[in-house]
Length: 254
Image (cartoon, rainbow, N blue to C red; front, side, top):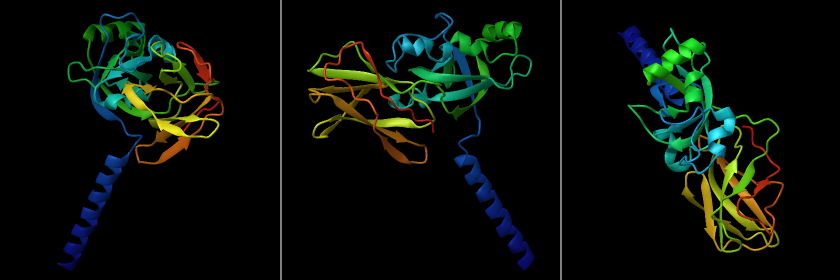
């Protein structure tokens, strides 16, 4: 009786630990489905919901995607995922690494890939044609670090901005696998900071921005709730202009 009870306890503990391991595994693949933009060119769209513009179509060589739940009201913009289809006849083992630049859903899909990215899940050119003909594929995916060698996080001032009345911008080349969950804009002289609004996607905005050269503070967050504020080396100049880009001087690779 005692031995039976002990075995039951051990088995229960093992199953509990196994369940915890499965649910907390950040490197495990998740089963899903993916389709592709049927009416676009080979790369992504320059009208993506993240607000990246043409950058959102060409970043990562055009290996980009829209997502449904992974979009997370814009927090997921700029995240990278390894996506591989599971049909052994057509699909490679590595799949493709994509950057999330848009929001959308298809036929029970988590991803709507660019045609280029969808094709790159295949073993070869002929397999890619067959995969595209299917339109939708069973896949598995996991989040991975974004990698932009020799690129710092870059501030792209939106065309709608008007100095000194309104400032809107997106952040390019977000490396690593952490999310940018908050952004503050600070005066460099007295370091009074203002929390910005996430207008939509990856677009951060404020009316009546502080005067003078401006310093950013970006809050990077992990899935485990670990938050870190990062302050760029370079400031946004006092005479910032709509449409311009400014190198932050920093990169976060974790």
